[in-house]
Length: 208
Image (cartoon, rainbow, N blue to C red; front, top):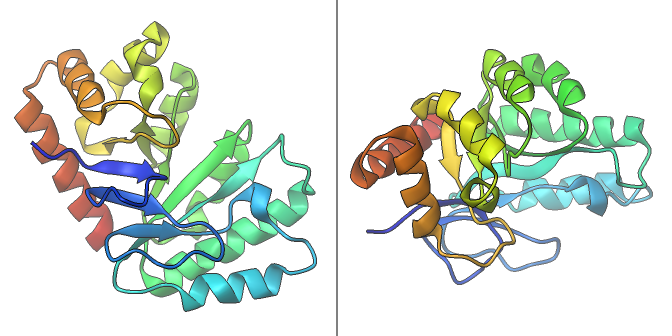
């Protein structure tokens, strides 16, 4: 069984969404493209945004990863401006957004009303209350390796509706099938049913 990797950095993996790095040649399968907070070049923002827009092809599944990060040495107001501009690009091109967020969840939530398409928090590993607030605001949550060992996150995952879940490897090197198996056990459903649901969720955010 092929497992869809919602957010990954391995160019040779075609069953998933590959995160394109600045200056990279586009792959011939699904990818996402965006300006990560750590990659913002304060003196070249307009050219970065032009690069982004010029590389949105048929295989571009989503804009991102983009978002807000409290640990990045870029002024928060600049991060928010670049994030908003990428939301506007998402609106213009009809693409969902893959969100990178570090200690800025309530700021990210405040931007939800500006987006016309789905917003997915990638690598979610935070507490139940943050998950609840994100779900209340119609975010999707993509889970990664932490689910395999983080008991608190496993408890949170039990409460997340199946139609709001994605699974990913991100930068981690592990067997994605193990994660799918773990989540199917936590949710009390078959691996096949979980796989079908993930594909259905993809169709929903792609067409929504």
